[in-house]
Length: 559
Image (cartoon, rainbow, N blue to C red; front, side, top):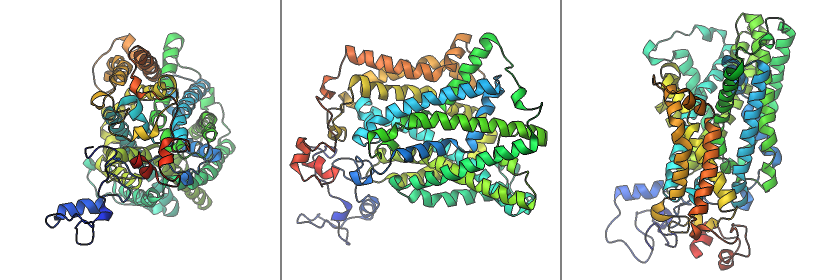
């Protein structure tokens, strides 16, 4: 078997002694060079060239499956109870919907999100593998890499954008402690698109995030517990204060009805629906990355309820606060940080600090859950010899926060921002194929050991499953004419624009159906197994070969 075969026994970094020579009977001809030593030094101890994997990429062992139903509930509650959650209704109401219809639109979008995330995460609870490994069953060994890179780019990009929001939380905290921070002189040029004041906040936020990236995924659930306790208290407190102070009179947003009617209103509703569904596509795709840590499969079912419930409640709170801000300050403030920045009394500043601190933790948890862990898992699969989840999170942080310079994107690159916002054009079909393959094609039956086998049954010809590629193309190509005008001055027909406004529903649905039909007509029979083979299957031949306490890598290499 060649170096990429799954049955080879490799030489690990640990097999080299302090002099850089192989600690075995078969010594190399000459001394090992500097680059070879460096290569061995940066390799992960758990990396296996023979399996092209490492501990973080392997199925989660039993002792690390620590997430229960309450942890997943807290995870999703904390995801929506954030600064971004306050702003959700703003974009929907801006296109002509009343607050009531906006609430319905957002609730429906999150119901769809919750169902898809739960459905796509079931494979993770059964096989305890990440998205990057499960995707091999449907896309093939090499084509799955393309899908992984696509999702990784999204995660890194939004990490940078969310870091910007996190820096706003830090800025509000500093305002509350030292009001003179408002007067810090800007020494940066106008072309920098960022002030000295905000750069200080940005650096503080970035550095404070790094220790949290060091924590193992199966242990980070305490952060979501903290968020879920503090953020709801703060959100309801801000809403209560707003109602008390403003009274929500006749100028309130609650008096604003739909500004559109007929088909225009219907398409505006669909556009808002598609936009809010699209905002969760990365979480839909990477659902197995979190569900793999579940102790029981049923523990993840709470996701389908927690997502729409918390999103709808948070949207309502956002509408109340924005409505009150119109009365109090003469303008609508959808951002709660802008609201608390107006609290300038001594007691008000103390309250503003604790609110901003709560939003800081909320933003931190959101960025880890939706972006850094997702992109880190992807890098882990692309370079398992050198990158684990911890290293991947640090790389995502540096690239997203500094290489992409989100302050430039947010202030001077609207076309690029629109492009990334419309990325669901590709992620919708990607997710649809995963769901279709797991439930309808392979009927929830994978051989987990073959998923790690470079030359195994899921390799497909040339490492590409052409069926998935065809279905993926059917899912996104028709949406392109409607998508292009959002990032350029190009024009599109009304029909193409309308199709784009239901982009996720079309892309996801078309991919699910077309992939199933193609696989029915031209099945890849070599990938079908009679029963699911998992690492927990004590009756399988794999487990019989070695002791049940052996690691996944030892079991795999023993086959």
